[in-house]
Image (cartoon, rainbow, N blue to C red):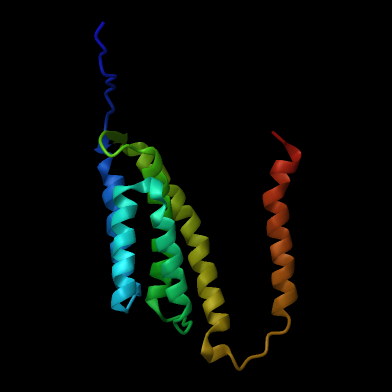
Length: 175
């Protein structure tokens, strides 16, 4: 008995290695952009290569943590473009790394699927970038002299509302 390989024609298909190469490009770019010290840059580049080559190791998320920790050492500024780029880049790294877990290295991926993923990415990024502008404007050293005691209870109420909004659909329809 012979075993024939399954073949399906996918119109407008991209090679699935685009996802893995995208992980590598985004990871290396963010690493070079954010990390100034040689040792940690080498660690970040090794994590970048591992994230693209062996997605099951989950090194992309380790790299995301490393990049975020390095950004914490930088003075917050609403005028610094690297903060906005890092937010978008880490999110894109997460999206591509998650996609690389389910997409084989060799094969084809429907371009419409890829565009849907990128559309969701853009829909999430728009409010996140706007919120980052507001947060950086509030916590930047230029605005540090302004006392904002009302901000803590407002933030707590917003956090409670967000939690309720996220939990409500699961409470209504338990599975």
